[in-house]
Image (cartoon, rainbow, N blue to C red; front, top):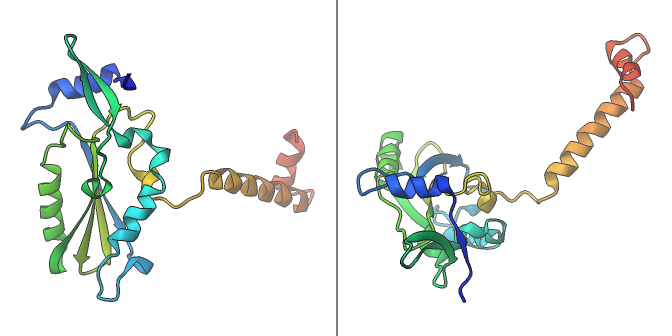
Amino acid sequence: MEFYERISAQDRSFLHFEDATTHMHLGGLVLFEAGPLTTPDGGIDIGRIRAQIAGRLHLVPRYRQRLGWIPVFNQAVWVDDDHFNLSYHVRHTALPRPGDDAQLKQLTARIMSQQLDRGKPLWELWVIEGLARRSLRAAREDAPRDRRRHLGLRPLYRAREPDAGRRHRGARARGRRARRRAAPASSPTASRARRRPQ
């Protein structure tokens, strides 16, 4: 029996109100420097971007699932997509060089105006190159399905280690404690340190 998960009431409302002219997905535009992703001919190495995302898809299992429907009840559910194709979801395009902000906005508007294919996982990420004043812009669009559990596509393209935030917060706390110990007895910092239990 195929595994499935019922969608939430909020997600059902998005599906109900969406039609060919009223789309319920969300989108964003993020600016990046190309840096080491630049190819010798000045383009973007889309293969490396896809490889990075492929290595992090396990962090967001929903992005490998598509909509399914329970017969008779016509109930929408999430099911694994057996034909998942990352290249379909991570798209690569370019502005006519030298590209400007007006061209970028026009292209982004065209991307966002397209309805997501309900036969596939409901997200897309577009890598757009050719903007004259910067090396790379990445545009994304994703359906706001189950947003409390899956907060956008950021986990897919951020290279930060899962416990990096914990280490960073711990380092800041240690730094604050060290500054309190080193502060003169008459300073406000020292006074706060005496009042606050360790």
